[in-house]
Length: 203
Image (tube, rainbow, N blue to C red; front, side, top):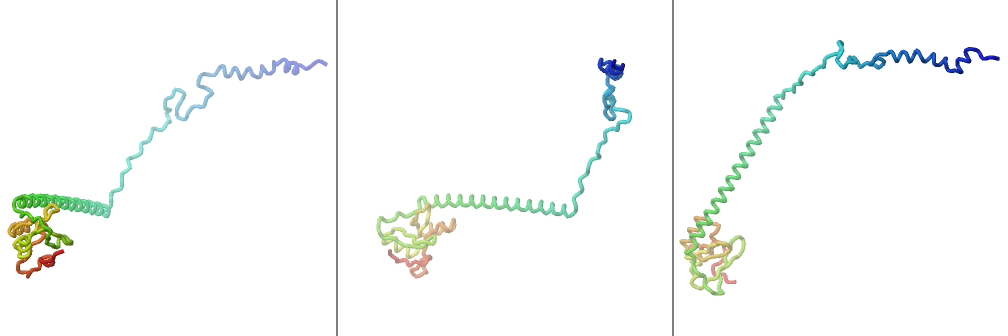
């Protein structure tokens, strides 16, 4: 039995070709840019459309003004910082002044003792006295010991050494810096030195 005209057309592919031809023709006749979804507000030429909204600029945000309590606290911190800075400056100035005075006193003592010390005797006899919370000693002969006990001589500490000086020089040392005067007996003490150590103590 002979195939129908429809079956023959299907086998030969003519029907399919006929169905595809309108679709292909439609694509061939389309203009460039057609068939693609256009971006919102932007036509195919890339320019903004007539209905596109202009970019909106946000108004500048102003920071809230500080309250009166915050202002008072900031002032208090500023005053405190200024006070501390002034105190530090005063402390530094005071330390510098003390250092200057100490240097001047040291120079005065050194100049005074350069030619006003009494040579110590080369003997085993010593005179003990208290200085700097410790018992110190200085080598003396009989005459020097008697003069020390009578308050006619004194002992001065300079550079870790204990030097014999006259009473006049000892008084000058006291005026310059009393800390360097190690021993000067008061003649009215009855044989007991200012340090409380008996003058005739021999160790």
